[in-house]
Image 1: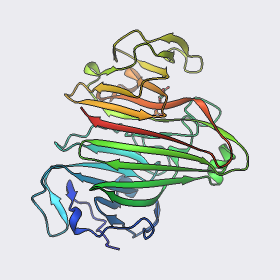
Image 2: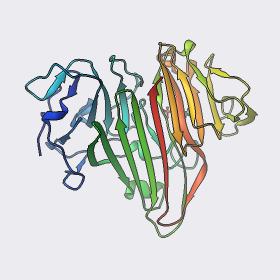
Image 3: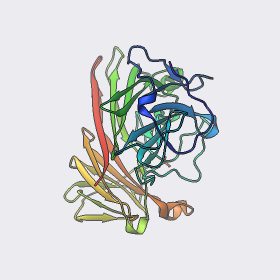
Image 4: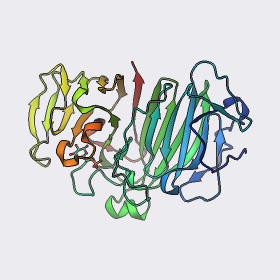
Length: 331
Ligand SMILES: O=P(O)(O)OC[C@H]1O[C@@H](O)[C@H](O)[C@@H](O)[C@@H]1O
């Protein structure tokens, strides 16, 4: 297996043709904390991110790649790039071919492998909080393993896995497997989350992809929610008010914390920075809009959260799985 340097590299696209393709069966299992190991295959490299935490970088070509360095990288901006930390399987960056990062990481985010990374696309699992366990569950707080990496029609595809351990069982005493597949294309970022019940008894969970989009909050607008039932958490998160969304265009004029039930499979977000992002999903039946306004004075103007969610419990019998996909794409 080809090894890549762990040293920091400039923003690049991986030169796909120079790297050896890795078959699913021959892949090295890499997990957070593994030292020295680096995994590479088409458009995928394992490197060290902030706080020396293991991070997977994906690159997908966009059009002609024409400046190739001897080190196997394409220098230039003509590609899309995504970063995923093994800690929390948190996608922290999605750069589109013009170099803009459409995701946002809060300035107070810590990369110490102890606290969840505040930003990008954290997982809320097995609880979308509040609830009996820690806010938004433990999946964003645990090291996931990189279990598969391949190139499908030139697109890098990686899969992360989370299994129960004593830490998760101290909060939720079930055996489970979560698989999170991430697929990067030149103009889209897709994910597929599969949760499987590996236990002998049924379990139930709620979940969300808590996506932080970079935005100018005063210009941000979400379309597609008109007519949806709402549970507005702005006054009391534990006792949300029921209602119905009447607006064609939902904006963020102040503090926003609202659940939308049974949303359509496609929403759109104008981020106020000149980008329109389509948010398509299968099986993520619900959505959450959140902006903390003055509760986070330092950064609230720079992001909005539009989260695909599953608010009503999903119940899985032993051996049963639940699968949901999300595709973010540039309109
Ligand atoms: O855990 P984080 O990233 O700070 O996000 C917290 C917020 O997450 C949102 O999804 C919830 O709707 C809010 O009620 C909550 O305050």
